[in-house]
Length: 325
Image (cartoon, rainbow, N blue to C red; front, side, top):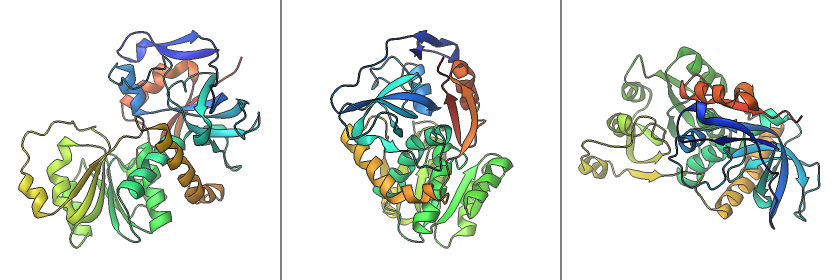
C-alpha cells in the first residue's frame, strides 16, 4: 500500500509518499480501507519530531473508510466506519481498535465522516466530560474557526442551549461561527477579547475552551466568572508564562484543567466514542450537527495540506482523499 511517512523531523518537505506493507489487524482491531483522513495539529507536532507517543511510522490519527478485515469484531467487511487510529491514518489501509470504530451516519460521505472523530470527540470531551457545561451556561470558545472550535460551537448550542462567545481573527471566520450558532463574535485583532466578554456578560463566562495558552492568560482570567471552569486544550500562543499571581486564581476560585485526547488510553477513547455517538449521532444523522470541511487535498499533496494548516488558512477541517490505484 501507499502511505505517508516522515523522512526526518522538520518541515512539510519531509513528508514522503512511500510503499509500505498493509498492516495486520491484531485481536480486538479491524483493518480499514481508508477513503479519507484528516490533518490535525498533532500530525504537525509529530512531523517536527515532538510527538513521541506514536510508534507508527505513518502519520494521521483519524480516518473514514470501509472495513477490510473485521477480525470477528461484530463488524462486517464493507461496513462504513470512522474513528481514531493510533497513527497510520495517512495511508490506503489502517488498523483501528474495534471498540472505538463509529458507524458512519448514512447522511455523510467519507470526506465528511473523516471530519468528525478528532474534533468532535475533543470538543465533546472538553465541553462535557471536563468542562461540565450545563444548560444555558455561557462558554467562551477561542479559535472559533478551527476544527475543534466549529465542533464545539455546534455541540454547546445543540446539546446545552449555551450562550456561545467566540474569538477568531477574520471576518470570514467569525461570520461562519455565527452561521453555526455562535451568539457573540469577537475579532481579537480588532478588540481586546476580554472587553468584548465583559460587554456581553454580567459577570464573565462559566467555561473557557482555551487553545491559545500563555498569550491569553490574563485576558482569560479577566473573562472568567468566579468559580468558572477553564480547560486548556492547546498552546497556539505559547506554553510558558512569565509571571503568574496565584492569588488571582484563588480570588476567583477558578478551576483549571489541562487535556489532550491523542495520548489517552484506548479504553478512554472507546468510551468517549461510544457516548458521543449515542448523544450526538442522531443529531448528525438529521443534519442538526454538521462536519465542517474547509478543503480536500489528494493524499499525494499532503505537504501542501500541512502548509495550509500551518498558515492558519482553514475554517474547519483539512481532508486528505485517498485514491486507491
